[in-house]
Image 1 (cartoon, rainbow, N blue to C red):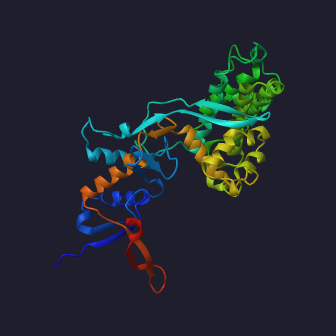
Image 2 (cartoon, rainbow, N blue to C red):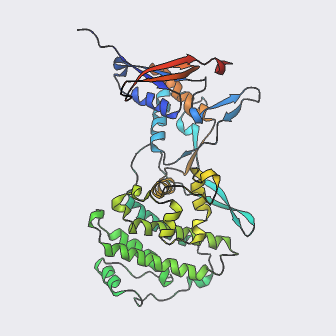
Image 3 (cartoon, one colour):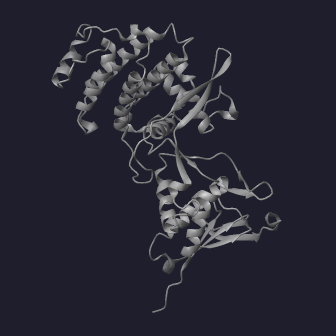
Length: 407
């Protein structure tokens, strides 16, 4: 019986997607028996928009196409990179020997906001955790994010105990003013209302956390009244906070930022619950622009115009023509991105490359793929893709030697 000829696979371009494709194809133990894989690159530098090189006429200075950094929730990226570095097996004393030599956690960021005629820095140091990116591809469910957001409000409140003493005046907790239906619901779920040393409305956040933790694990078993209770408790806290900081946020930046963080988080929880994203998913709100969605759910204008929202749009180039009055970012995309980026990162918010992307990503990929048997053809430019008669398949690829890029 004659041997079946190997299928020829041509990968056009040497960017991240192309090299990852080659990497995954060659992860199959019998790939050499099935395929003949060739990567064609127009010039000599792999990496696509992430390509980098070193200028030997300027002390080998790194030259990048743009600013790039890996985020702590890039599970797929880190999973592949970790496999790549492990397979390379570089000596421990060599530069960038392991992926943790090549990428270091980075948690501190600072944005700027235009307040009272001047630019003010808004620094924030994201907490680190013991996790490592690339170990699991699982993210919290939409319902799980609600619990994390409630916890975030509590952590923000606990961190601001330096606020004016009037915000923390001790008062006895009573059930007066709480709707009867809510009192009954709290009793049914054995919620502990004895939360000492906190103003009454501040205690509502802690009660909301208990109520959320008492919900069944399966969201299909949740009752509408339970969600109404969460929003009532968190809404009362939000209103109380606003009444206490309204007159001071104009001159006290720390208090204004505290209010924005709380209002922002409450709005996200409110929108997730009222739009039933726990069942429908993030994509169900992509018909809205994100700022439009925030307004729909009652976010303060100071929140909508805050550096938090602007930074999210800036991150994805979400302003048409760069104009702040032309936001264009799908609400579901924005919400998923923000929650994963800030609440699902492993180790740190960012992992910063310790050299150029060429050194830390594309050279390791190239070395591993070459060792595996992938062919690389540099200085080849695509001239034409020939389609089948029904235009459903590519039947021919015309490549030419790219003389210009060799100069």
